Amino acid sequence: MAKYLFRSAYTAEGVQGLLDEGGSGRLKECERLITSLGGHLESFYFGFGGADTYIIADLPDNATAAAFRLAVTASGAVGTETVVLLTSDEIDHATRQKVGYRAPGAR
Image 1 (cartoon, one colour):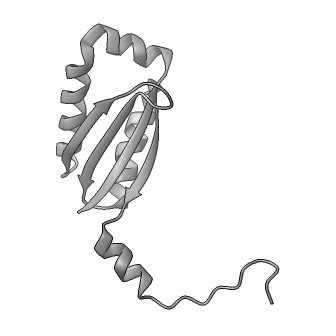
Image 2 (tube, rainbow, N blue to C red; image 1 turned 60 degrees about the vertical axis):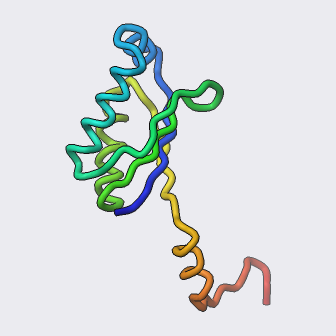
Image 3 (cartoon, rainbow, N blue to C red; image 1 turned 90 degrees about the vertical axis):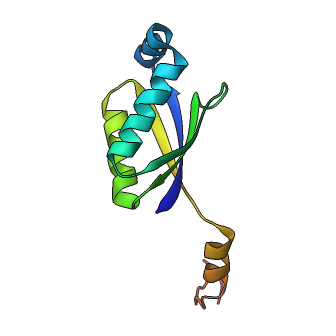
């Protein structure tokens, strides 16, 4: 499974729903949705500032993460940004790959 960070911001409609059902209601719904997609909710936090929620989840693959994001965003109550999280082992593997790249303007 792959690990993802979802940063979300509520619209005015979403904030009203949050006020109506509370934070635990949102946590339960998020966990239900992720589990129904074959994933596991690792953590769910509320914040204030740039995002309203920070969710870390294990999901089977990128297509499943996209399905999660599309379903949430299509509600119109939440805008979501997805970040694919990599382990240190995955980065180690990436650093061992030889990639030929020429920067713009370099000769």
